[in-house]
Each structure stands twice: as C-alpha cells, then as structure tokens.
Image 1: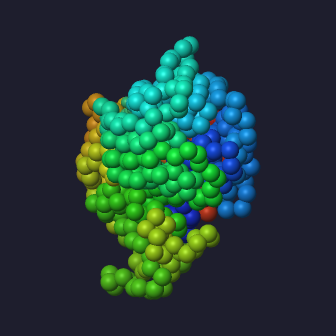
Image 2: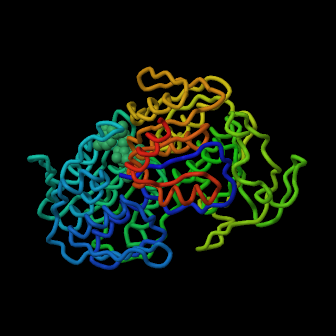
Image 3: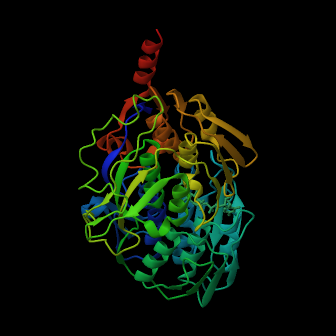
Length: 493
Ligand code: EPU
C-alpha cells in the first residue's frame, strides 16, 4: 500500500488545471448502457473509480477504449444479455449502482449487488428503488442482490418524489432520470437533486436524444422517447477538486491560479472561503490591475517555493501582490466567458477567520469539501463550527487532525474547531477519499513530516495528486508503506 510523506511548511504557487469531474463522469459512463451506439466522453479523469466503472461496464457488455486524446473514453454497448453487476466490483465502488436505471430501461432487467455502507455512513439506496418502482419496475432483494424487472410493455412515466430524511439523492436522481428517458409518457421527479453533476448528465442524455427539462431545479420533467443514440460530450470540471486546490492554496498561504474552474458550481464554497479571508478572483482576458495598490506584473513569479511559513513556525506571511493577469490556459477551449470553466486566482489574508458552516445539498456547502475545510479551519484565528447534514458521521478525519495538534470537539453531527497557531506533522490514517484530502492539506501546513497512510482512498478521486502538488511547490512523495514505516523507525531511533 502507498503512503504520502509530506514535509510541511511550503507555500503553493503556480497554475493548475482542474480535471473533469469524477462524480459527473461515473453516471455518464453508465448512461452508455442506454444505447447500442457509440458514446464518447471527453475530459474523463484517470482515476481508480473510473477504471472500476469501465471494468464493470465491460462485464455488462459495454466495451470501452480509454486514454484517447482529450482524456476521451469511447464506449459502446454490444452485448445486452449481460446484466449482472457483481458484488466483487460493487463493493469496491458504490457508484456501480448507476448502472441499475440504464440497464432496466434499455434491457428490461438488471441484477446489481446491493452496495453496503462505507466509512462515511450507511448509505441506503431505498430512494433509488422507490423511484424505479414508481416507473413500474418490479423490485426484489435476494441474497444481497437487487433484481429489477420492467413490466411487459416497458417502464411507464410517473410522478416520483425522491426526497428522504437527508434531502434528495444524487445518484438516485441519476438512476431514475436515466431510466425515465426510455419510459412511455412523462416522468416528473420532485425533490430531485440539483447538483451540477445531474445537470451535466441531463445534458448528455439530451445530446443522446432524450427530452429532459428542469435539471438543476428540484423538479425535473422527462418526456420518454423510443430510443437514444450516440453522442460526443465533454464532462464538466470537478468542483470538489477545484475546492480542494482553493483550500490547499489557503492552508499554505499560497497563491494559485486554477484553470478550467467551475466557478458557477462553487458559490457556497467561495462565499465561505471569502468569510475566512480566502480570495478567489476570476481572471479576465483583459489585463486588469486590482485596486489594492500592490499590482506589479504576474504575482506568480518571483516567489520562491518553500519559504512561506517562516520555517513552519506557524506565522503566516502577508499575501503577495494581487494582480489580475491573463485569461485561460485551458488546453481544450477558450473559457473566459464560460462560468463553468473560468481561470481564477486564489490568495488569502495573513490571518484566517473562523466560520460557521453547514453542509447541504447543492447549492449549499458540499459535504465532499467538509474535511478539507475542517483542516483549513484548524488554523483559523478563533472558533469555527461545522455541521454535517448529508452524512452525519463523516468525521473520521477529526481524530487524525487531533494527532497533528488540532483542537476539535465533536458533538453528534457538529464539530467545533478552535484554531491553533500551527499543526505538527504526524503519521495519520486516511479513511475515505475526502478525509484523505483533508489530511494532505493539513500535512502541507504542518511543521515537520506527516505520513498519510492508505492513499488508495485519495487515488479514487484525485489524479496524480502528489505530482500536481509537487509541481506547485509542495514537498510530497509517494512511497511504499513499508519504506515509510522504516523511515519513521529510523527517525525515532
Ligand atoms: N440516502 C438515502 N436513501 C437513498 C439514497 C441516499 O437515505 O436511497 C441518503 C444518504 O444516506 C445521504 C443522503 O441521502 O444521507 C445523500 O446521499 P446521496 O444519495 O445524494 O449520495 P450519493 O448519490 O450516493 C453522491 C456522491 C458523493 C457525495 C454525495 C452527496 C457520487 C459518485 N457520489 O453520492 O461523493 O458525497 O452524492 O453529495 O456522485 C465523494 O466523491 O467523495 C462522494 C462520497
């Protein structure tokens, strides 16, 4: 197993492109099961979860060619007799459940192993099943597998309420919306998830010939069609990766430019960060100098990496000159006017301010950035409060942050973080994808060495994270766990 060894105290500077969204791409890959024609998706990130989904699709008769130009993946469903998503794959990736709706709609039948809980909670799928049953599917659970079967004439449109005790469901909305594209008549999903990934899926499905309106609002209307065709579609950039890099800039008191940044999907995040003293400024194609009186050329140049944290003693330096410079360097397209593909510069105040945040369904603050924000707030000047409303137990990073000198108290689904002047490096354990990201951020801000174990969790959602952070000035290496343990033992002797 791999670990990250991080030497803290290095400010991040430079430019990084935000990759395509994992959580948008996963249900889109599954949507290729809705047609026998080729579907090409571009800017699909190269991640463990994506590879698992392609493997699963292969087992379901859908061939794929990955690693093409522009991060493209070309899929084609060629054998529709294979409709069993096995436990061995489903247990490695809960998003396997996305294949349920498409297979049911196109093949009239599917058998998908029931995903279990995971480190962040129980994660039931009752709403998915309720939605598919409302379209006429017969749903049974036997020996850990979900069996769904369409009625003899096929699925029939209906009004479906998808709200649950924790709000709507993202992948449940994806499943029901996908299935309804081929149902007879009109389906209305009430209390639909409003996440940008649902809008992106709806756009892909419409490009394949579906008739979907209202995606992005709590009411989605789907007019069923006879069949869908192939499409060529580019996945939106990953808002969670973008938010993670914003917080990486802030926690190291750095200065980053993010290209291909989905600002329109990040309003709650940039609003929260602004309250903390973190500035996220869209760049324009015209050179505009800010009014803070510091402007001189490109603020990214001339700041040596690794000198920012006053040798890790926790003293944060003044934000360097803030000058808005050129537009996008996105390799795929000119993105200046696309609110989902902006170039933005992230800088922060010398002292971070505490905030009160509650995670909520979109457009609220995303649960997938809660751990990273918690790491950032350990260094704020005062008491912050985070309440988790999506996955009330998603706090496994807290015990690890305590090992690094953070002051955090948990009361049910709320944590109170009392900011400290500095964190201290320590061996810590990653337990889920976003908790791992939070620990990497903490490690980059801490004094001394942090060893983050089990980074396979991180690899599920961040492509070559260590290389990208290193190119921005972080001191971070991927090493085999045994080597890292050896180094720790030597350090201790
Ligand atoms: N829920 C139910 N019943 C259901 C489905 C969900 O009660 O049938 C509850 C869940 O237990 C949770 C809430 O509803 O309390 C929201 O869960 P949701 O179904 O929306 O989560 P998901 O669709 O399984 C996606 C993302 C998660 C992200 C959540 C919330 C993907 C592949 N996964 O999961 O991403 O946290 O939405 O935004 O899109 C991650 O990327 O790290 C990650 C966990």
